Amino acid sequence: VQLQASGGGLVQPGGSLRLSCAASGSRFRLNEMGWYRQAPGKQRELVARVTSGGTTDYADSVKGRFTISRDVAKTTVWLQMNSLKPEDTVVYYCHGFGIADGSTGYGNYWGQGTQVTVSS
Image (cartoon, rainbow, N blue to C red; front, side):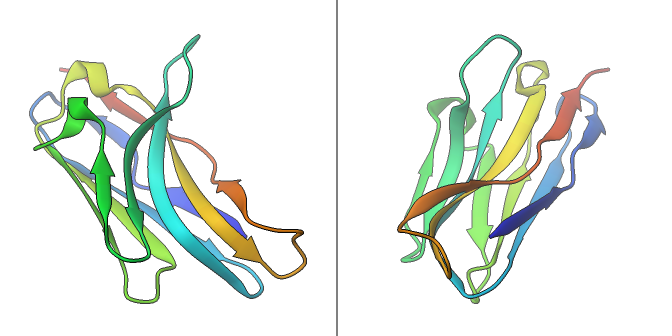
């Protein structure tokens, strides 16, 4: 499974960005898709995730500001980020958990990081 992330960039405090992540590959099923972020020298942390059943989960620091959504085919996930703060400045990674043809079982899949910078 390949995850292609896009949508990062530079935005002023209080502004908005929308991240996208598209999954592709041979037959696969992702039970969960989401976004993590990682600051230099720190562990990667959950930002938001959505299950195949539509259940969402958010980090406390982004609740009320970020919204995660997923398409019907369950191969694309978006993260709408509003009211961005300077502390949201980090690299964001798309994540998927599921199973694919040729794999030995369920596993984690990661996209390349996309930089989000919030600065005036």
